Length: 446
Ligand SMILES: NCCC[C@H](NC(=O)CCC(=O)O)C(=O)O
Image (cartoon, rainbow, N blue to C red):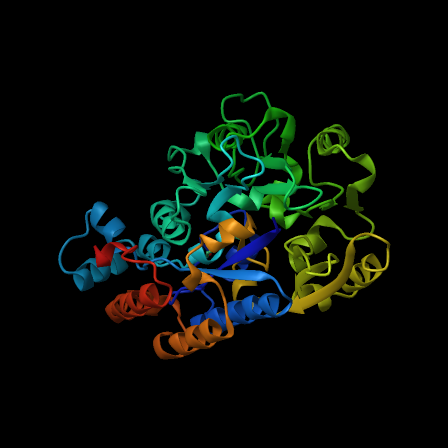
C-alpha cells in the first residue's frame, strides 16, 4: 500500500487583518493596526497550495471560520440585531471586537494534532483539535475546527475524532505547530515528538518569564493518550524558555522535521543532547536519521525569527528527494539564503529550496509551515477523504474566482466595525461550503 503526506492549508478568511493580538509573537505586535489585504492574502495562500500540488504533492484546503464571531459577542452581553451587537462592541469594547474578527484559523498548523494510522493503537488516523486557550481570539476556533475536520475526514472506519482538551491554560494545546513526526517512510510507525513550553502542575520547573508558554507538558501527554500512541515511540521535549522569551512562540518557529530529517536550531530545546539521544534511540535505525542542527554563528535565533527559516515545510517529493518550502523573507536575507543554498549540497536528503511569497500571513507571524496541517495517509485513507477539499486545477481556479467575488482588498481597524463585513463573510462561506461539500459546518447555517 502506498503512503504519503498530504498538506491541508488554511484558506485565508475574508476578515484577515492586523490587530496585534498575539503577545509573544513579534510580527503580530509589530504590524498591529497596519492595513491588511485579505484578497491578496488568500491568493498568496492559494498560490502556495497550487505550487505544492504542481510539485506532485497531495494538497488539500481547510476552510476558514465565520468572523466576526457575533455568538461570542452575545455571550459577552452585547444584544440586539447582529449589526447592533457589532456597533455596541465597537464602541464599548473595541479590543474584543478586534479579537472576534481575527482570521487566525488560517494557521492550520494550530488547528489540531494528527497521528497517522501506523502510530495509533486502533490503526485509525486520530485528530484532536487544539484548544488554543492562551489567546482569546484563537480560543474561539476549536469547535468549528472539529466540525470542519469531521466534514473532511468523515469515515469512522479510517478516522477518529476527539474533542479538544479542557479549555484551560493547564491544558494549553497549540496543535501540530508543536508536534513533529519522524519516520523512515510514511508507511512505517513513526516517533512522535511533542514539544511544550512549560509544566502546568509543577512551578519548580523552568518556564519563560516575559512571554507566555502556550503549550503544556500535560496537554502533550493527554493527546498521546487519546491517540493511543505507544510510549516507546513518543518523545516529550521542552522548548527552551529563553527562546520563547525572544519571540519563538511555537516550536515550528525554531524546528521542523520530516521523515528522517530533523532541522532545528542549537538553542531550540531544553536538555537538547539527552532528548535527541532519546529521539535517536526510539527512531531505531541510527544511520538513517539526519539531525541538522543550525548553530548560533550560522543563523542566530533573532535571524530565524525574522526570516522564519524553520517555519519552512520540509516535504518529500515523488522522487523521494526532499525540498524546503521557504518564505521569500529567507531568500532576501543574505546569511539565511546562503545557509539554505549550502544545505542543499551537503549530502542530506534536502536537495532543493523553493521560495514563496506569503507576506500577508508572515506579517502576523505565520509562515509556510503555519499555513498547513500535515496528515500522513495511506492510499485507502486518501480515498476516504472528502474529494472536494483536495486541490485540483479546477478547484484552484474556482477558489480564486470565489476570492475575487467576495474579498475586500483592504481592511483597516475601522472597517472591522462595518456590519457589512459579517454579511459578506457569511455569503462567501455559505458558497464555500457548497464548493468544498462540507455541509452546514458554520453556526449561521444551523
Ligand atoms: N502559527 C502561527 C500563528 C500566528 C498567530 N498570529 C495571530 O494570531 C496574530 C493575529 C493578529 O495579531 O491580528 C498566533 O500568534 O497564533
